[in-house]
Image 1 (cartoon, rainbow, N blue to C red):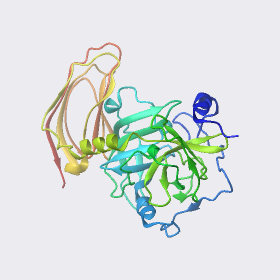
Image 2 (image 1 turned 30 degrees about the vertical axis):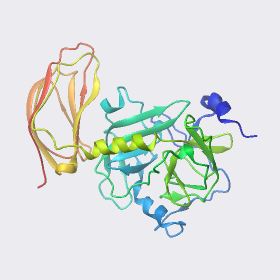
Image 3 (image 1 turned 135 degrees about the horizontal axis):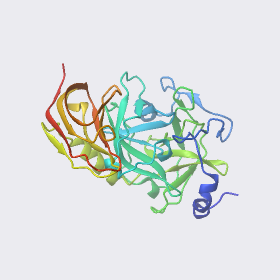
Image 4 (image 1 turned 90 degrees about the vertical axis):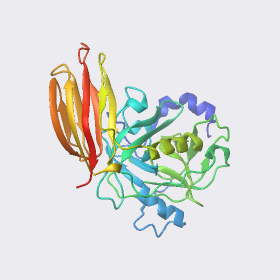
Length: 337
């Protein structure tokens, strides 16, 4: 017997099985195929029933750690919340620069800049992050909240563990049409690695939500925030302006770990800048992650001239003593050789 949404949400923490591992856990032995393993590599997408689904393929990538992620536009990417560490600060102040996403046909992976939204609890399991550079393709966001629609036939397209981008056959979905219910169920076949995959309507490829895992002999996923909220975030990213020539940060408190700023590759492939620090050495530090994943750490009273590949993510880490005073970035210039 299938349980009601309210019953399932009550028991979910006991039977909760994400389809790929959280950062400090492994679910590699889990097999979450629902029926008879209908998964097949998408190849050029010719077996997909609509052009809209084929156009979506380049917007679905493999993320560091083995999960799937998908692009909504302007560098806004969605995945499952359990695929990323819980942010220590508010999402906008939390960097995620150790994660990147490789997209089909794109040589350079996208680097995660910072969290936009995050939820991983008994109610929902999704993360929205800002990445740079952006892939050219994007998943179609419906103009209205999917929760207001009747359930439709759907497909899950993602990266099973150690396999190429694959698609399920069309499957049944079901959900409560109340906007307050954050979860839905589906019977598409999935495997570990599918966490974070888009669940797409078969007939027009519009996004239903993000696949999370399996419970009670069927799969479940989370709806993303309403379309108007997603559109607001997309517009804010679109309005991202070039780097300022000078930045000042500080003084700093105890045990801080937060994003100071990021400098996009949108305005140039490299960034020149002068970094001046007055930090407690060696415990407090400025960490700069560049576009190829290399980290530059600066501590103490210091001054450095840097020329690094974009994008740059600048993070602060301090200990309990709280004696660090300031970080100044000067002569900041984005350029392309």
